[in-house]
Image (tube, rainbow, N blue to C red):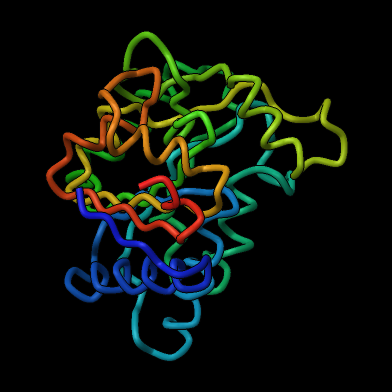
Length: 241
């Protein structure tokens, strides 16, 4: 596991975007796994800037998002479909047919999860997976558990995750309690992985992820086993290392 410590969030975002841009320049039809949440927003802003300056091109890029809230329509401002369009897709030249996000309002969860896995396999798998990390150590929406969930599945969110996401909703009662998420096996099959973390509230979790036991009770700890995992932290998130 490669650890990079940036001075602050701004520097973290620039470093992450530079690495992602390198992947795009090396392979113009890369399959990218993308994350949502507040942490990658700065990275997406940097990628948009590089696109506008003609440094990178997204015409052949294919993307798969890690997760989507269950029960939120795509038009909802808190859906991850809306998030990705707001912060990245509407600002670049990616093709609509190359964007993949789980259908959060499906009536057939099992079929949707299988479909999503099949779509990933048809592309040859994810070349580069971007991750954030929850305060409880979740990656995607793979919450602490007694086992690692392998493939795309429906998740019941932990109360800690629900509480953390409540800040994005006008009414805490509107926060979804379930989501569709890639599983740990799907994430770990990515050829390269880059995890981002910012802020002192993540420091204890980051320490456990890097130095603790590999356990489904801290899902991100599985990244210790990935041969091409990079972790980019700001100084606050790295303060216990």
